[in-house]
Length: 256
Image 1: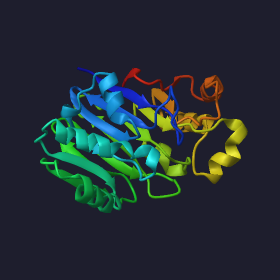
Image 2: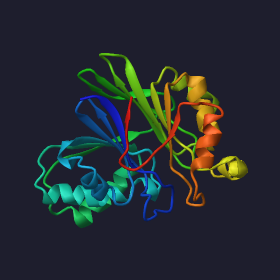
Image 3: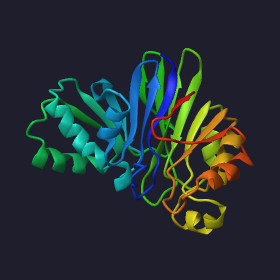
């Protein structure tokens, strides 16, 4: 097994026929981390032959629906499958009340333990420590509390990071310094940079500037606005700054 990222959803707020909402799986030599759970995530897992039974850790960046709505069906199907292993969900503090509501109304068949680990840090903080693996969370700059993640393979020093949703900010590239692969939201192109700033999102060019400043080896762009029929403009603008930029495609596997 290698250290990989599989993108399951590449759209932003509006799901489309050929683009689902945010969901990604980092495979760290056989250990899986599901990051964000947009609508239809469990179907995407099945489509790309990723076993939900192997998911022990789910990381939720923030509590906007396009990053969260899929988790409820996923939890229910895990119960239907007879899951007994505990599940750990790392999510912003207010997810606790959402989970309580879900379990109170729809959790009758949930026989496995669900542990919510609240995120509220103001700077990078280790949230998971496993054999040869560590995961760090750090705050992003969005309209509500939002967190990025950095997953590290200690044997080789390799790491991959996830940054969505966020406006770029000075500390970001510092916190990501030396990361091999960065997944970064690129909701907008240059022509909509003012809208990006207003909505606390990033342009593809800004995402590329973060990767370049961090000394990353590879940048994967995602969270695309539905206004762009041709995503080539986003890729072109990013590659003007950081040539090793790539568009996320659903089901595509990126080596770290």
